[in-house]
Image (tube, rainbow, N blue to C red; front, side, top):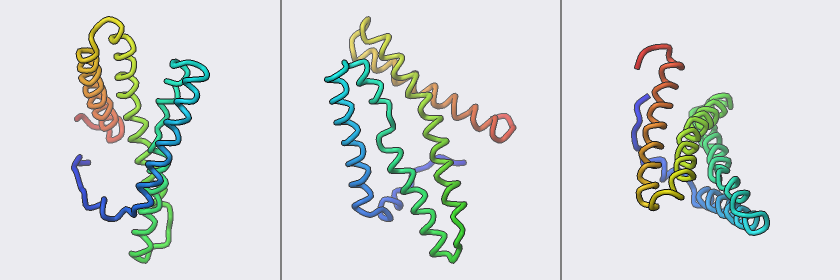
Length: 145
């Protein structure tokens, strides 16, 4: 798989799909704020880890893939579900890097200034994400990378 940027898919999405993502993320942010006010910032912080955009995005991935197959005259939905599953796998792999980022900030912010702590956390996030991706490729394809 080659990692790249393709902005042509932005034109394929409808305005209300972006609104759904925005509304879902906003609603979860409000819920997190209410929980943090009621039960404290540590408890509220647990809910900040919820992937606010992912649930809306994965359903849209499946929908778009189904539409592409229907336009091509293929009525099977398995490919659309597989595309959504691949997206979910990427989110799961990405969460490992986010965990490293959060743990690093949690431990570094009390000791160092925020700029330094953020820089270290970003560097460790990047390294962890690359290592996880390489391990995934090696395990998935059974070959050295």
